[in-house]
Length: 175
Image (cartoon, rainbow, N blue to C red; front, side, top):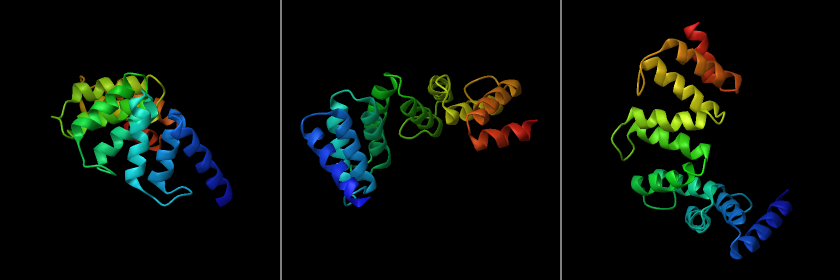
């Protein structure tokens, strides 16, 4: 397995140096997680940024997360939101979920349940179970929307049907 990881790293690096965004993003993953290479968050950040600058939504999501967590770069919530929005505007559900979380928790921005709802809904409509469960919670608590137990159950059921255990537990608790 180690041989195949080194081979993969070799080809990703070759592609990355030629500007292939997929290879750049994957190489970022390799360095971030220490897959076949020594873990290096600065190199991960570098490769995510290279792909992000070319408009690659998965890398923009990864770059936004690096800014959000301060992994490989100083923590900067403004830049995190900037890159997440670039990816989210391209329909990247993972970025939409993260933006929903940012507004829900007030990470570098004022807490805004309306914006949180907006971004979770975009991801939920794409079938993302975490976003569906989070919408259920927003409806249950009346955050960003009018409190509505029927809507909470609806979204918890969708999340549960998509494999989200918390959605299943929340649905069971309401039934």
